[in-house]
Length: 162
Ligand code: GDP
Ligand code: MG
Image 1 (cartoon, rainbow, N blue to C red):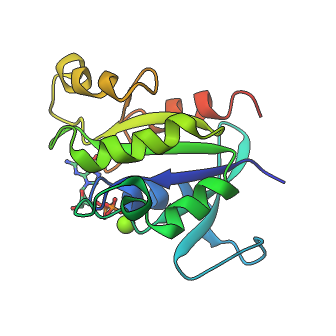
Image 2: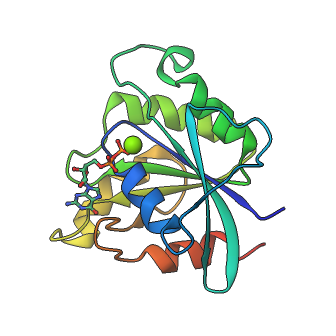
Image 3: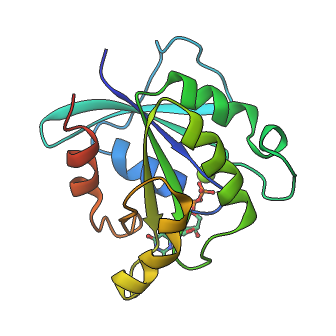
């Protein structure tokens, strides 16, 4: 089995943009992944000589209260299926309540989790990152999925143990 990377986070943070970038080289949607459902999208990719599977999720609504309501079931399932969780947040909007609810879940989860700060294009990196340290999930990692900025470095780092 190749390592499985789940993309989770609020709607509109750029999960599908990153998914498309990570899977475009092979453009192969996974047909034989256990537990495959229509609510999650699975793709294969390869970067830095390492193959992986990536799961896109529809996102978690920011309107609800409490972790059970806030975490859409598909996101919880994707986290269960994954070896690595990329928790995506938006540098343009900053932190919000939904991000904090997701972080509370991820902090108690056993899965290796990375905070990925997207849409850093045109922003000063250091100040763009400052807010996201508060999530308590380690060093936030800046990317711009739409432009590919830092995406291969991110994947190199997260796949390092595999
Ligand atoms: P999702 O709902 O989390 O899957 O988010 P999408 O991938 O659909 O992206 C939401 C919006 O953010 C789209 O309009 C994207 O073009 C935009 N977006 C995604 N990545 C970037 C980025 O790196 N920089 C900027 N400026 N916009 C981005
Ligand atoms: Mg999407």
